[in-house]
Image (cartoon, rainbow, N blue to C red; front, side):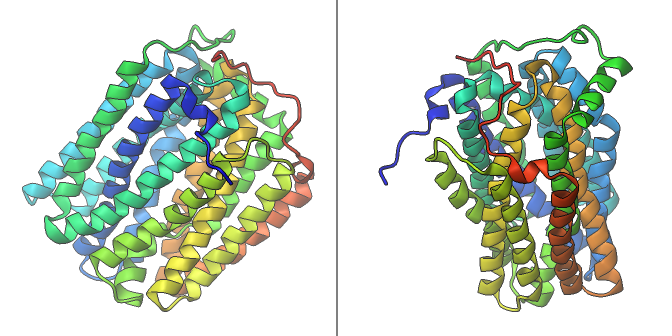
Length: 417
């Protein structure tokens, strides 16, 4: 098959944002990988609860600020919000670097800065995801989300792999410093993009409880959207054990920092491969069936990863998990954005953020507790089983998702041409 330039990349504004995000995400993934290793170092011994606590530090601010962040994305200029959030996250990374250099870092301070970054993310993600449909026409939106997935997962391959090398060579502080500078790529892209048009609804003039209620009410009246959010939450809640990776790498598989970096990149390798395939597809039918199947495959891959006792078996399982997760993510995002009017996109995304961030972050807490009581492999394997059972539950209670084809009428108003 002859490769073509993906349609979304023909649009200059999206292309600029896409390139900037790829650089920034690589830096962010370096920091995320470093934080998990840092906590394992500061703990002195395997401590699943300490690693699981990162999930709690991330989810509490998201639960607190997400709905406000969504209303802000529908009220104010989304591009300007991104200027503020990206700059704020750069300052968080710089603070972590300085504290690490000075030897003043602690697990408690890592939790605090993680929570601060999560608060900024609560405003960043609704504005960023809602901005994308304003940069491309509706016909190219599925491709745009496929390319966004590629950007995220390319960064998630490079970031952890580089983090392993940087930690082993220069130390943890440099991973945070590099991340601080990586946010500059997005800031430059936002400057070059220029003004972006967006539609506004009747609550766009202010942020209040009625605006939030409008967003929540919309979600609960759209079973196809609600079902994708529930599927996202339950699947990631049960099958999320990324914070256990340092223990898997160091204490089960017996590999060091570089092996840990490769394992942390493995899911993203699979995700990029799947994203590249999707980027060449102009029409995808039977999207509901593909979505449900991909999440089941993700659960099966998690089970295999839990049983893995060799580096390459673990890598293979993680690559399969990443590919299947990428497919489900692309389809879920496309469904939600095309079935949501533009003036509600920020609030829809903020509600979805509670689901897709809450699932894995609470899942990391759950995995830490199960691993502490039983073992890390048991926590991972039982999580994969729970993921598969959650798919069956969603399929039974929301039969609309299984019959969704992808050519249903759209509700999205996309100003881009």
